[in-house]
Amino acid sequence: MKLLEGKTAIITGASRGIGKAIALKFAQEGCNIAFTDLFDDENMKATEAEIAAIGVKAKGYASDASNFEDTERVVGEIVKDFGRIDALVNNAGITKDTLLMRMSEAQWDAVINVNLKSVFNFTKAAQRTMLKQRSGSIINMSSVVGVSGNAGQANYSASKAGIIGFTKSVARELGARNIRSNAIAPGFIITEMTAKIPEDARKEWEASIPLKRGGTPEEVAGVATFLASDLSSYVSGQVITVCGAMNT
Image (cartoon, rainbow, N blue to C red; front, side, top):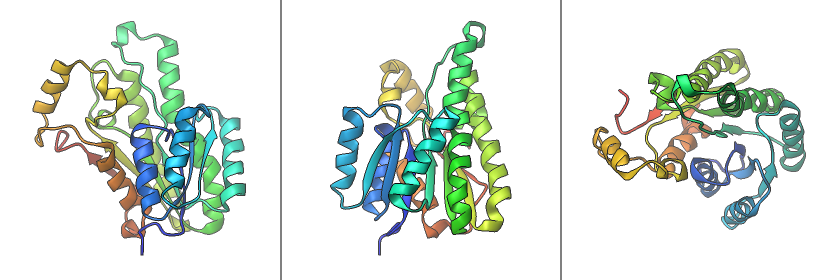
């Protein structure tokens, strides 16, 4: 029996990177996948085909996760198409890194809206179905910088710290209906986003990690799979760091 056999998951921002790795891992464990990204483009179509080839139902949806009305619309479509929501992975995120003295209001607002408001939007829209089912697992992507902060990332750190507070509050609110809420806080994960970091800075960062390497999207996906499955049926309100002991 596969860990997520017969379940349905919504994964935001899943055309690439960590979100795509989670979608593929969930599918390998028998989960039907509804995933979103900002545009219905070649990336989305290729990801949809890759997930479907595993043998589960898969569909991509164009969605602005930071927009409340658009999120209500897309979650309504997903429920109509799939019938249920067993797991919600709030993964959509962006960075606009700069020192606070140089940070514009627009850079602050964009990161808070995409990273934090999107979690509110999707959780609020999906909870109705989960409340009716009296079951569900909400998995929110935070970050180690949401736990410990980082210079040049005040907007990103604030958004990811906000996700932790939100996660813990939702766990308390929805626990009586058998709905769990947890956060994952990845450290230095090798993705398209981190590939833009200069090599010398990347090597310096890796040297500071006790495991002496960056993590992979698949390693984050393994933790997400645990949280979406019944293996974690008594785990709620927690933040699991996936960071190679960088943040202890």
